[in-house]
Length: 196
Image (cartoon, one colour):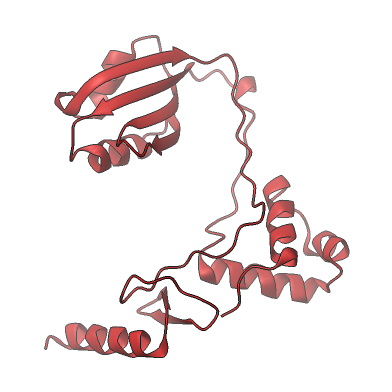
């Protein structure tokens, strides 16, 4: 399994600029053939680096509520529950979790009552404090930079290096640090599947 190279990073940057960019255009920019670009993009999808191709809306042209940035001081142990609840909402555009376990999210709230929005969305008893800021503008620019792959072994949790293995098990792709972990994972999966 090879790591990301400069060509992969350039392809990712080009797709971040325009996910509908034709493979022929990408091929010209990275000096590869369109089928070679297609193979690289398919590999990045198989690895899970590319999960889907999305649409970038200019929300300033849509009237869908008041843009706010909300920071929630969440009680210990409730961070994942609160984050998941918010991430499932259409009004929420981005959700972040800080190293301290706080949840920060950007949303467009119908009306001006953030308290009512939170009461309808999360268990407010799990919140210790709420800070709300009105946004005048926001920009989201994901970038690849000099990133390298950071895959984790599905069996032991170690980092997967260039010597690692990948396999599709029951329709889902998994990554492994070594052949032994792959074999152990497949054996355990088969045992569970057969009811042993």
